[in-house]
Amino acid sequence: MERGIFYWIGFLLQEFWPNFWKGTLITIQISVLGTVLGFLLGFLIGIFYSTPAHPNDNTAKKILLRFEKALCLIYVNVFRGTPMMVQAMIIYYGLRTYGVAITSFIAAILVVLLNTGAYMAESVRGAIHAIDNGQFEGGKAMGMSHLKIMMSVVMPQVFRNLIPEMGNQFITNLKMTSVLNVVGISELYFVTKTTANIYYKYFEAFLITGMIYLVLCTLASQLLKLLEKKMAGKNEYEIAAEYLVQ
Amino acid sequence: MAIITVSHLSKSFGKNEVLKDIDFCISKGEVVCVIGSSGSGKSTLLRCMNLLEIKTSGTVSFHDKEIGGSQRRVNEYRSKVGMVFQSFNLFNNMNVLQNCMSGSRKVLGRSKQESKTLAIKYLKKVGMAPYINAMPAQLSGGQKQRVAIARALTMEPEVLLFDEPTSALDPEMVGEVLAVMKELAAEGLTMVIVTHEMAFARDVSDRTIFMDQGVIAECDVPERLFTNPSNPRTKEFLTRFIAS
Ligand SMILES: Nc1ncnc2c1ncn2[C@@H]1O[C@H](COP(=O)(O)OP(=O)(O)OP(=O)(O)O)[C@@H](O)[C@H]1O
Ligand SMILES: [Mg+2]
Image (tube, rainbow over all chains, first blue to last red):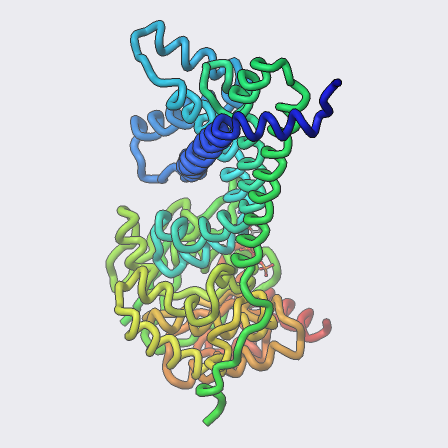
């Protein structure tokens, strides 16, 4: 008698749950590490990119700044303009060819990080640009340095405005890690393929994996909504009664 | 003795010469109002005075020392010369109290406690102390501007520059801001005020400046400038203003 899909799903889960579990953990590790480090990189480049040239700088310094900005631009365009899978192959095998043996885990994180960094750099630059110039001038007029204005006035606003975007990026990364199986990292997609191969049960195995991705992404987006709500602050403020007219 | 001296100041935006060889100074305790038609260069003059705009030529001196050179010196100067903007420019990510404490803490390096005490002192002065927990977005225009004034005062500057502080306000809120400024004037705070409020200018200023097409067309005590101006352009401006 043919056994139905529910039987096989149950069977696969029972027999191979450690595989799915390990794959899920690796997927989470790569996405979280890659995304967080990528955000850092993106913020650094975005901030650097938005730094105005100082009028008192000498020519050499100005040229250097131009050059560095051009490098950033190249980086952003290369990583936004090529598929992640291709980047993974080039970074993993390329580095090996030149004698830098990195593990596939490191390679995977590197790819996610560099991708996220490129996308975030552009978003951060745009978000800084969108902050009203009055915010800068208010700080300048009090004698704040550019760095202080950025740290205490502009970036907190930019960060808050970018939370939805960062959430999207994280969810995209969770799913995009599946292409990294090309460098032999045993993330969720990879383990599913090998597990399915044992009994030739592709449909059932990938149904399980689809569910796992769905749960991960749903959890992530719920967490983000919570964070957004928290960052939005209260709608009302309390009157400080002790200072009402004496 | 002059606190700020502006001499031979010129400023061009591209080919457009907006300020032409301006000479002007302000002494301790003086209140100077700057009037003039739109586009005459009033804001640009004020912005050049605290180096928000880079002058084309001429000098700005503070206690007879020329300001410029290192950004550190510029920032130190700015911490002693406050500015209040038409558009308030309160920090959107901070509540009223944090806004007022920000410069005191981050620029002057005062302690948290001292900054708070000063901030509250000046918030009380402008009648905004009960609102310390409010965010700028939760305030009316007049309230925002009073907080902006308190924020500038918390730095305890030697001079306060105002660029049309009431022009972005609904008419019913203009009065509350002008009242605060009048009080400051009475207390002897040194102020340069760009304004379109003629009655106010006449009332508070020790000297009134009429700007026209990038030059100081007339500078006199308000009693003379408003009633018997020597420059026909001043007269023309004032009659046009009264007519409208
Ligand atoms: N950033 C800028 N770039 C180019 N031109 C400018 C800039 N800022 C001001 N100007 C020009 O300089 C002239 C003077 O402007 P300014 O803002 O100083 O006038 P104002 O007297 O303050 O006018 P208002 O009463 O309307 O505020 C105007 O012709 C204006 O178009
Ligand atoms: Mg103006």
